[in-house]
Image (tube, rainbow, N blue to C red; front, top):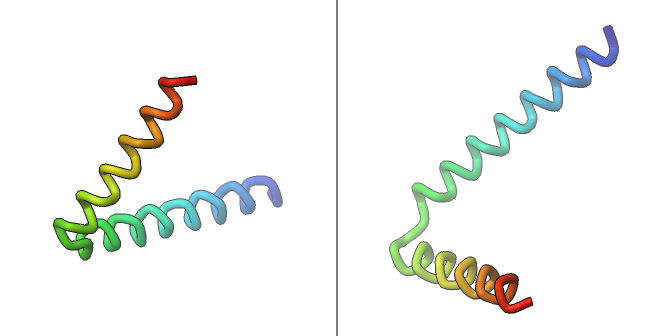
Length: 50
């Protein structure tokens, strides 16, 4: 029972975090989105270079 409750609480926390992330994404300006994309692209390039 305790394991099930922990699982359900964790799932709920994960869903809430996903909701917060979605709201942050919606509220970002186009410039912020572009900067985020550039950062992710740079990180991906670094990984490819390894």
